[in-house]
Length: 339
View 1 (spheres, rainbow, N blue to C red):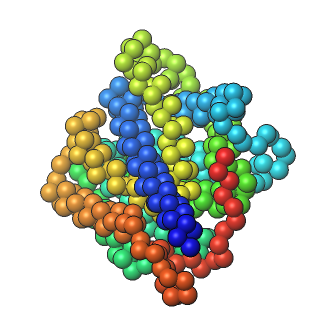
View 2 (tube, rainbow, N blue to C red; view 1 turned 30 degrees about the vertical axis):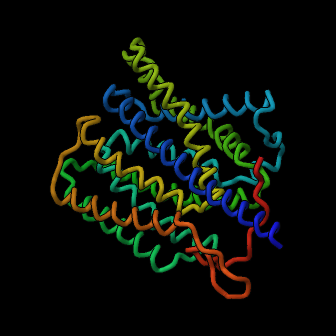
């Protein structure tokens, strides 16, 4: 019995470590790519967020193709049933990337961070409707605090941009859908995280390329004067590669935690983004009401982080309790492919 208990405790420790590590990894990747994207699109005034999203798609395809070729990563070869298995993830993935970059370009980082918190409520609702995951009262309070603070911050936006607001709200909806459907596909599609990343990017690259060309963004980007600046080139390439790393970290965090946790970790990193954003891009206009709203939202984020990542005490068998802060309304999901 003692050996079995030790093994069980060891597995619990490893699982808890993976939950926290994957969340921290996603938080760092999300923070870094937000700052780099803002620098490329606003500080250097790169004209097209659509071309930047094409670069991120291309980087994911190339890195994963080479990784599979050299047996570094594994995922299924293409077959006719793959599009059916992963739909509608590719459409959600592409829309999330493009509208997210559009919002980053149009809004200051502090306002972008505040508005992104609406995705948390959307994720919570979708998790309940699609995955059958019901948050506890504490989790709901933290989510409502974040959303309420975001509404207060948005109510006093002195640099209002309608297109930016529209892009961010579309991104919020797609982020919630992406997180929930990603969790569902990881549980049922038998594709693995690398397969989902590769085929999401592959299926959407050609439609995105055609759309970008039809809108004239390819010509506009080609005529951009900054291609001769090595500092711009480094940051442009960083943005492309970080697009792949962010996708990987998103899937990893969702796999070991939940779609709601992934969304809120993304909002937690906005604590840093908010204040750094006051000095990056030069497009933030400070107001006290905006600042108070952001801090209320931050307090809700910290409460959720504590509730989610604190180590749960083991629950005795048959006690009827639960070590989770979410109650599942559905049967346990199928195997998660950990390739």
